[in-house]
Image (cartoon, rainbow, N blue to C red):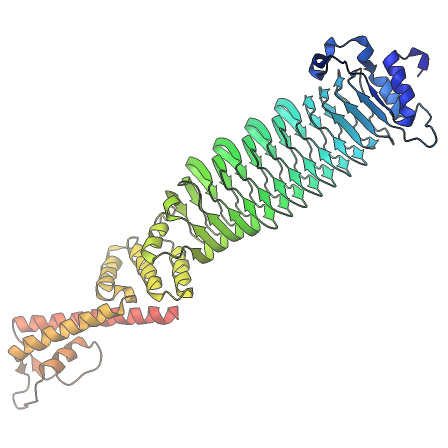
Length: 541
């Protein structure tokens, strides 16, 4: 490039480059600082992009003992800044500049790049390697920011950035690698999809106070995202559209504290198969219009839904199917509006609140060690009966709850749960089994009310003793005169097996024969139910 062809502002930049001196072309008029109105700026603030390319590509020899850098403020950059496949070894720092065309840095090797409070019609940095920071703080990028396959060894700072590409990709960062932190906070706004699938972040990912808008699809698509430390989507974070973290891994904790997610009648938060090394907080004002799903997630610590508001009336509001967690704090601010699916989840400690139980639950296969609070069995049975998925009969939720009570030493509550299980099973059986079931329930409470059987036995024994004391049955053999005992005779009738020598010697007649037959049948049925109850008790042991 011929230096004689440079304009005055370009010559200033050319001469300042070898020593890294900053060139400020800003106007003293505060109304002329906004890059959004760069087309109104005077010619003494215009710099051609080809001049920047020449400087960054080594057109100027560096001054020994000085650190070369391109530092420019308040310029309108015309033409295409094309550094595709270039190797740039000096820092690039542009502040409050406006680009007429989207810069192209694809597959370039760059030093630190600072584009702060700039206005760009797009930025293409696919496959770019930046040995240092990429600093985009306060800039506005329309038409898409492409960082797919890029590698940044320092920080990616997008604090206060506005990305606008409605209906398209506001941020395309598939397989992006950032060795340090990523900041999308302090007023970060994205109109369009933010894509981070397969991205790797060596530090923290911060979306605090960010606003994402893509109601027709995914607001944040970050499947298989890998973050070494914490992820913050809190402090006023809001999203219209799906937040997709399926298969992501978080090395610290994941915070959605106070976040507002909206994707009505669809999935607001998809965290299926998520892996988190510590805790997940969807709490303290967290609100979701649409499904929240942690199906198959593995959370080493606590999943907190304390103070949350979950709404998906026509479908599943909360999906914890197959989740593995040390603790789940299921105490939202209000009743969950929709189905809560806990089927086949494995939770060590489940904390809930009876006042905010959902109207519908799915509990089949749910495993837990402890429930807090440990309320009486009758109240917990109301929790089991919220399960709307039992079109047939699912015994596991009853067995799990009974086992929990027995572990706590509350055997009576455990028996109450198992009795309820037997009664609910009866409602799905055929007529014959129902009759037998009603008899078992009435006589001995399916073996879980053993004293009830004793009461029936003593009642029948007393009845028979009184009846046959008043009317002694006739002797079968007139030549034999055994001693009659009404108590032993009634007991002999009741016993289904064995003999006390009374029943074989006497034969009542008339109505008393019918009474004797009733005692025999009652004794037979009672014997079967007692045997069934004893077998069930032994199997529990």
